[in-house]
Image (cartoon, rainbow, N blue to C red; front, side, top):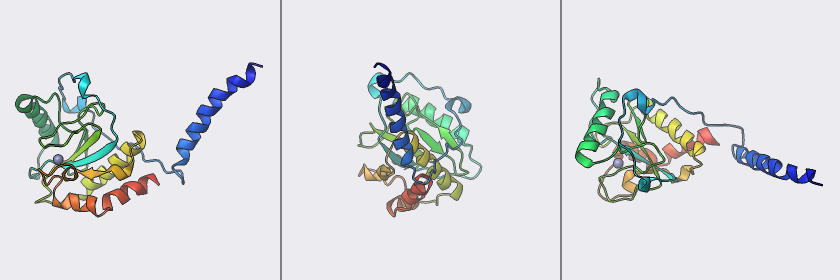
Length: 202
Ligand SMILES: [Zn+2]
């Protein structure tokens, strides 16, 4: 009578798997967008302390807070951010987990298994940090950039089992900043960003 028991575990695993899949009611699955790997932009992070490990449970959106000028090179920008952070802030890597250029290209930043960095007072532990280049207090978010942010965040929610309703702007966690800037924050606050993410998941 060993045989029946051998079936219990595999069928339990199978049924749990099916239950998880069933949350995508009409079978939609957010596909992984193209992401430029950290090695490809020449990332040279310092080793990360174990004390900085995290499990991401929410997504927090940022802007760079610096005007994006046409013709800027995001490869140069991300390397400069890493160099500055290491030198002036003693940050082991870029502060964000993903960074998105105005043309929609997505760059891999810090390993998301480690908490990000901030110049403000909130605790970044548990936050997956997504930054869009530009200053959206003074500029508008480009369509390609917004679309990439939606696709990336939908995929992150699905892949890391993060609830889309946890999507916030930096300023929702800090009184010291207007980040992610007026134009982007408006689209987070009015539910536009969330509804676009949910269209890819539901
Ligand atoms: Zn921010």
